[in-house]
Image 1 (cartoon, rainbow, N blue to C red):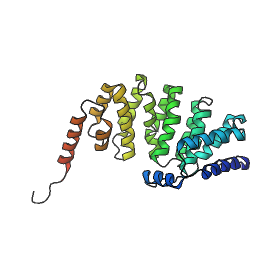
Image 2 (image 1 turned 180 degrees about the vertical axis):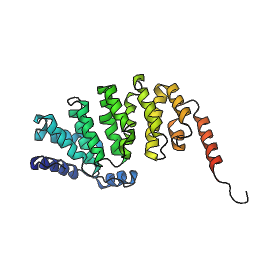
Image 3 (image 1 turned 120 degrees about the vertical axis):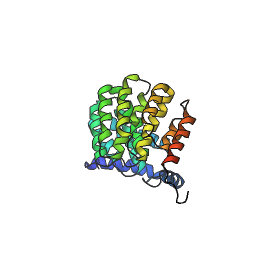
Length: 260
């Protein structure tokens, strides 16, 4: 939470604006969809984006030093409700991503993961898609190497964020070594959100570089979950064969019943 009373008042004003348009039905839908791992106010993303733009303009936040604006955005991400986090992520994406050096933003990202600010796949992937992926495109291989290095982090969501942002750069072959190394390091984990993070990158690779995706799937087939094979290899020509092969592995691994 931010310590400056003035900034805290600005954040409280944004939260009041979000509360004023919150819809209970939207809140219920999102919380059910996310299995109640994170609370919602009940405000859809386009409305959050509009409110952030109006709120920033009315408070003159654009006249503040970039580091002060980053502190406000960070404080929003540290809040517990999803829309507050989305507001902070949107603020960085729209107003700070092109102004601050990648290393500055990555340092803040690492601190946010370390303090547990991300604790669900939706918000973590929002951050990956709207901030970290564009940062890789902007910062190049140095930024890619730092993000890929998160594959050994203690925090689950930081490990997921070591692979998901590479969706933004799957078309660029210079990033494939980072993808391949990170997949190799993570794929042995049975944790579903690590597996599906890998799956999304495989799926995007399948559209842009199918041969690379096929090589990844073949290399790590035994470690990829049945869900990844079923959902994330569907753009590959051997999708049906992969599914049948995985089903066969599953049947062979089941213990025989007594008397059978």
